[in-house]
Amino acid sequence: MATAIRPSIADVWHWLSQVPDPEIPVISVTDLGIVRNVDWDGETLVVTVTPTYSGCPATAVINLDIERRLKENGIESVRLERQLSPAWTTDWISAEGREKLESYGIAAPVDGTGAEGRLLKRIEGLEGGAALTVSCPRCGSARTDKVSQFGSTPCKASYRCRDCLEPFDYFKCI
Image (cartoon, rainbow, N blue to C red; front, side, top):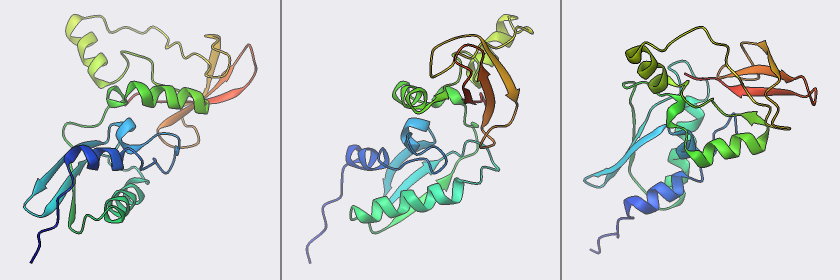
């Protein structure tokens, strides 16, 4: 009996990079940084996923899409493991993912405002009450106002640009 050739981990990461986030289809689950690890356990491919937050309604769909994509590529045995610690942070969004968000009209998280940046500021005693400057993804203006803490999905806030007058979502820092 012939043994099937096992795909490389690099191939698996490539396939996963083609799985879109169901709420923001322009960004993949790997761009989002929620796929934390891929490894073989015997003949079973184990994919570790950290949801953006524990109550994310898209988690079940993401898991189904990951499993479907892998099975389409010949992976017969897949085990998805949920990893809650460390908690996901917007710091994990790739540079390419941030560019994709901006191109799509969603302001990417402001650098240094994710969990890792906030922790560093607390350690250095720099955390203060300064207002967050979110630039408009359409015209680049920093003259924007938060309209609502909650946008089209729980992970986004609604903003409006004072220059081009367009509304836009901001991917909140978690």
